[in-house]
Image (cartoon, rainbow, N blue to C red; front, side):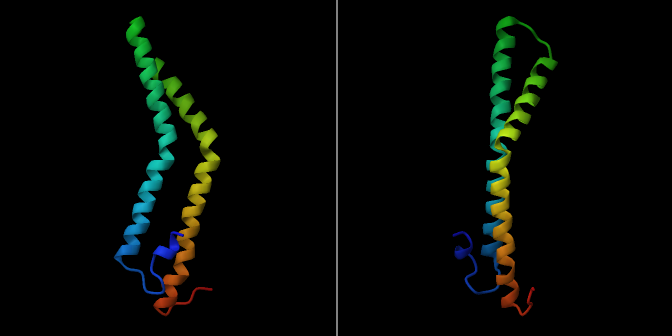
Length: 107
């Protein structure tokens, strides 16, 4: 478990902060990947289509990217919510472990 690798009955230190920060940044990249990847793929396909047909309409690239990005957000929204919930739960579960060791008791 992620929390078992942290503090283990002592006050929070730089290692714990670094672990939470690293996990938050990894989660940010992981959760944005479906939307960014799909927009990248659609942009590449449309640019290939524009290059082969020589149609250089600027709005042609934006509308499909926006539609695909919103579609991917709708499709992966549950998974994103579960990942964010898990991360927030770990952080809030860790707070009493920190405060108990420094003499502050949270009820």
